[in-house]
Length: 234
Image 1 (cartoon, rainbow, N blue to C red):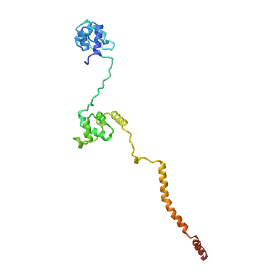
Image 2 (cartoon, rainbow, N blue to C red; image 1 turned 45 degrees about the vertical axis):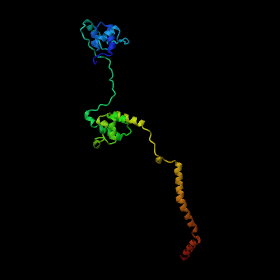
Image 3 (cartoon, one colour; image 1 turned 45 degrees about the horizontal axis):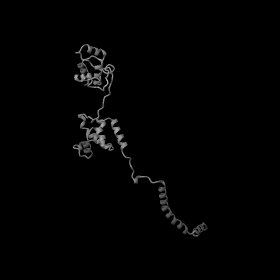
């Protein structure tokens, strides 16, 4: 079917309606069965399909059709189409080369340690593994746990840096916000200033009272009397 024209059945309808090619020639060109082409001519097949002109799409030339109409044994040749179809990306498990499959557990260990926020489905997409293997590596029940060493999957070629960053950003968005513990929260300024004022009063308020009492107990007359005695001796 790789050499068949685009929309084979619609092309066969157009050739039946607009050329005098034989059923075998149209069937050979469109990769259909001759009986199916005969059913198209009889109106039993493709009744609701609109014919597709292979000349406008560049799949067949007028000269090629003229050659086929002159010689019923001539096989029409498909021209290179001018229409470029994009490649269809098939979704499926990521293929890992045999030479790199032995490094897959190391990549899983690296993802589990460095990005614990990643879900199992995301690790499966990045490393091309299964949930059983991921659980075994996390629980250290893997048969080769003692020999495993964390290795970057991008360096190993298991995924691209773009894919890794994309999955990490998705996991960060889906992760719940972190809640700080009550012991780590800061107290308001009013509470802290009140506590500081109380502590200063407790420390300095009690110690200043005895000092004042001691000052009151000092005899002023005796002090000045001693000074007078010293002056008189001099």
